Length: 206
Image (tube, rainbow, N blue to C red; front, side, top):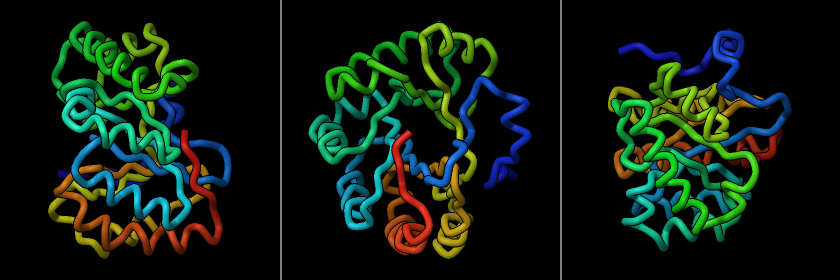
């Protein structure tokens, strides 16, 4: 299966409804599928590197790990909507229900996360125009990414993930995953990459 690890800038033109990258020199670290039993270790790595990130939370995982979800907010990171069940095959109206259900959970965790610009990322980045329309009607900015860490891919080594993260540049939205299957690779690659990148960039929330 081929997928681009760096998304070409033509995506900004083809799908301007989505946010692919920012126009500044900061790097925007994002973690999908949170919270999880691995979140605490990710938070420790980010804290040591003085880096802030945006965590895209799955509603049913918020209910499973409520204390961990609260700690993400208390640690100064941003939380955003990643659906309730993390299913990519929902019909548009079912997706609407899931987004609103997760929005209520996010509001309880951090009212500011849904009071201003609301952020949503599609599970697996898979969507159609009907789903984009639903998110627009609900007032969400759909966040994609410009750099994919590929941490989820069993074929991609820790060394390759480190190479990809080192290649981050100003304005990049970098996607990683808050999952047990990705933690071994991130544990090895992320602290090194952040230490090197911090010499040239800050790490901001979206």
